[in-house]
View 1 (cartoon, rainbow, N blue to C red):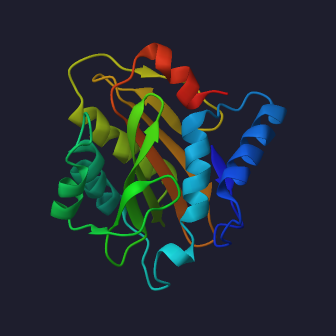
View 2: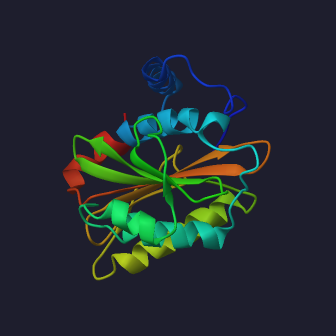
Amino acid sequence: MIIHENHLDTPPNNLSAQVISRVDETKAGGNRARGLIAALGVVVLSACTTGETTPSAQNVTTQEAVEAFKNTCLASLPSFANFSTSAKNAGLQSVRNIGPLNNAHQLPGKRLFAGLATTPSGTACSLVVDSNDSPQAVGQALLSAARAATRGGSEKAYPSSFYNFAVHLPNGSLVTQDIREKKNGDRSIVFVTAPVTEEQIPALIFN
């Protein structure tokens, strides 16, 4: 599902309050699936303002997004212990933290960020990209990369009216994509967690 965001370049005054507000709106709205990962995504997209990058930064292609995802989040599974090294080797540069994302890195000159977030179920890695390509196509390419990196077992998809996809991968990691429509290219916020049990998933993706 694509969410329209017309205020992405307006820095929030209180990120925590904004997360609470968004989650409350969701509960009032009915059956949207929005759990902890969705709340993290709200903070991440709010923090990724023009203050986090230069005005000249360019949107990324699907291939650039896939390569960055493979060489950062997926390369450092299952614990993300070597995330910093992987990001550096992939050509990303360390930047100041973005909302809940620690150890944030940016692809130089591009609107692409990667970083780590802590959840009650463990660490999650997030990739945030702005692209002129179809966000659904970007998401499917990233999901294919995640499947290739964790092959060897069964997976389970969780239907959602909020996420473009939420899939429990063969290695136990959960991967999600949240799409936000922008004026100059759509934003994809992708999270992949350390391996979690099926019982841990509802808190991550549902109210």
